[in-house]
Image (cartoon, rainbow, N blue to C red; front, top):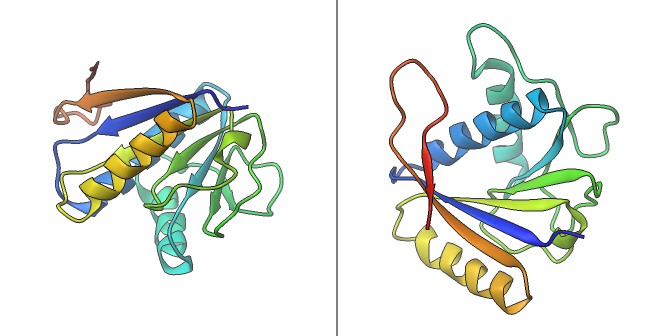
Length: 155
């Protein structure tokens, strides 16, 4: 079902930047009444993201559930082959290509300037292209003061 993959390339080198950006994208999905599935590498990081979604904004929280939970706009998962509702956007921060990622309506990859993570992201990009996905890379400018969404430019 998914035909497009968007790689958001952040200027940051810290892993935490991916998490914050994922939260911001999930909030944007929620405000646009779109569902999303955030895929994490393991249970420990899933629990950290769960806590972050409750607290990343001072004035509100983002309703979400763990995979298998029903009815929430944002779902968190960490199993190797998650079941993804076809109406959901997949935000993949698991550092691996998911076999059934095509179940999602679209796919988002978040890339930071980490020497370990960059080659993994490049490998996923090549695999998506080889599989026939429409792949776009979007460079994200550093965040401005005031908490607004960082600006992005397509490559």
